[in-house]
Length: 598
Image (tube, rainbow, N blue to C red; front, side):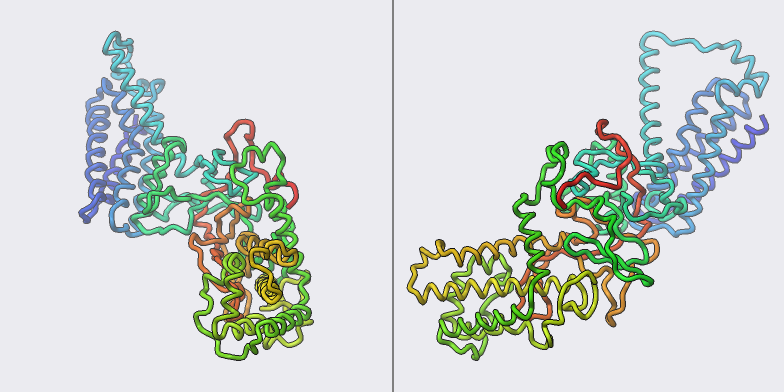
């Protein structure tokens, strides 16, 4: 009996302390925290001390038990309400409230243990006599129906709050919303995320359990999407939406952005880069280096990266909803990359000069006049527009004053100041002076820009040749040479449009002096497995029209949303440890994907 008394009084004192910590001086929802916690403290103190301990009255023992069962839930509600206002609480208040809540929760479980039906009556002779004289009997009729309804409601409410606490501190269910992780996960798969080792935090604070778990390349993790704002208003909205999401077992989603669209938050991706690494991805191959090692290919990345969905096993393909391209585009991709790698810059220079001479010969213009500033807009230098409107561009170059000069500079300025072009070549070394711009990614963009220029120049000159030969423009579509050039243009257009799904420059970028930068401690870089259909840490959500090769003032343009960023461990909710639905795919997510030609 003394132990029960001790724990009850300790519990009430802690509840009073928690109530004192719940005071808010702001006229918003946070003001509800104090009355809720204080009223509950008064009620639980009244029934437990004055009824049970002082009066030794056990007629309302079930009520006392219910109060202690609900105590952790009521106080965590007050905790959240106090932090759901417009102003943040001081960290020391967050820490103190969290510690007191933990103590209250532990003691409430201890008290429930003492108050269990098997033990409570043995503490007091009066209670034992009352128990023997008043055995429990089942109610009948409407009274029984009412009692059972109340018990069901009680069980449901406790289950909801228990699920919420488990989801905050132990594990969380997550439904896969997209195909960014095919074939590891498909749309609608549900995975369990273990959170305890990942340092889960109390709601709307950075106070919680310590980080115990580190991550390594290949781990599938769930994390908060850093693309969204993390101000108080958004954090409160996110917590409330996650509350609804959790208590409905992932079936109801209310986390929307300002446009009413469901947020992609949290995300499930795979760890691709670790602390202390600098990364680069080229032609679907991931490279990494550290301060102590040179760039080498990350061979393991090919175990889970899926590039060509057309090569997946039929059983998986039948469940995939979106294919970014067909097998023909995939083969064109490989062909374009091979052509880029084998591009001879010396021969390219000679061809550009030859095309320039042919242009002069066919137009009768020297190409040394003033260049009109508005001859072509940035949008018009987008490859699709360039090649789909090649006939219009040809006539413009012929007829507009300065068009001939623009063509000469467009075809030839790229090699100015490069020295011996034979010194530049692609090989297995990712960085070095043999690469334009010093790294493989920049060099590849330079070469793709040059390939676009050559194709554009060939088409312009071929159009001029047919004009010179008096061939009606209606018959140009039957010219085999011109069609070959257009086929090459089509491959380039498709490749450039998707290149930033397959390639990535140095990340983190070198500093202003060209020194390598590395992913900081406790930070990671994530990518989806389905690389052509994954908005992940490689990308922003906004596209920008930029030069394909920035140092060329006549560069073609392309739309990019490449903006890689790493994720701090604090935003990681935990590992996606178990796929629990559908049952026929139940199990731990593997480190290898089922894939064909990649």
